[in-house]
Image 1 (cartoon, helix red, strand yellow):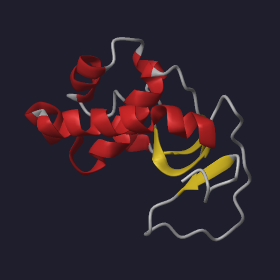
Image 2 (cartoon, one colour):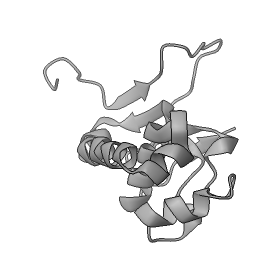
Image 3 (cartoon, helix red, strand yellow):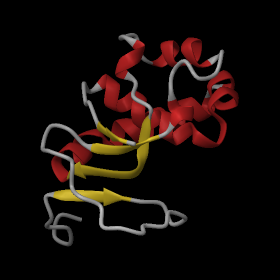
Length: 126
């Protein structure tokens, strides 16, 4: 991919997102920018604190209410976390309690927990 992608920043977006205005790059080399999702709060659902705590031992506020899409992240940072994000998402899916708790946003939880594990703090856009 390094031969094809020469940009410093990567914009991650799902196919069902509709962008109506240009999105400024609010990311930096040390902080990605991600959209705020209220349902991604570790305290939003009664079971979330327990299940998040199973996968992240640090302060819950480090697990930010954001996901990988839409997001802007420095290419080197994305390269550092991609395998861990993938691996954790698979582990979450294989764990019945996590799978049931996180449901259709499981890979988003994989992203935000992976970022917390790496000490990555997003600029969260509301």
